[in-house]
Length: 331
Ligand code: T6T
Image (cartoon, rainbow, N blue to C red):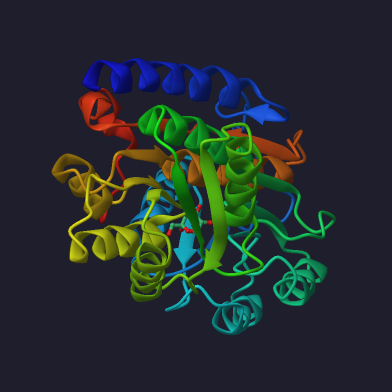
């Protein structure tokens, strides 16, 4: 089994490195964003992540700050206490008064954040989407994100390899409706799982991005579907909650748990056997690339409309080779 898993992850990693890096749009690191003097001389950038104190966005902020500093810009970060558009929208509105040259933002809702983002753009602020995106593709000058659908596909292939010939039910945990990234992950997983007739999808459940809700959904699924063989958790909080649900039911390791992201707690869970695989993103690169594109736009240079950041599948066996993907809690 260990050998099978190792072989699987070699395939998974190769897939992620080759397919995901080479997919449509631009690739990270291939844009020259040497800072030339922008027209206005304004060197202030703002970053509004999806939620505060969360390792994915902290790592993104670290990458963005480093890039901004090297280019002679300042970066101010302000995040909502929860992944919630009603908390994020006022931050964007208030930012207008500080007159940043560009705003890097992870919109928490693909429709509800349209108006505040439009308003700040109309004031002349360059808008760059980092991680999540609006449905309306006309507002942002550039969007930098992982290939989330392909990450879901990779998770389904991984789930099939882990289950082998075993049949059973599989649950998907999503966060909130309107989150572009996790919706794409759930779709990619669902479409690909249909290719494995021994694995039956019992549903995609929303958790409001709350670990407690994720844990409760897992508990309910275990009781309604005693043949549960797998759970795919589409982000950090759902993964951490699902791990708790399985641990509380003494099902860790018996039900395969694949999480998205690589927070310290998820990485520890992989070591402990609570998770069987993680699909890690590269948030620092997303942040860096966001700053590069903002500066390119401000400097009148070419901007790439869509940029994909790398994704990698990690198992216990491949952890040490992939440490650079583990998320940070401080820069
Ligand atoms: O998975 C990331 C991010 O990509 C997603 O859009 C929202 O959740 C996270 O921030 C992890 O919590």
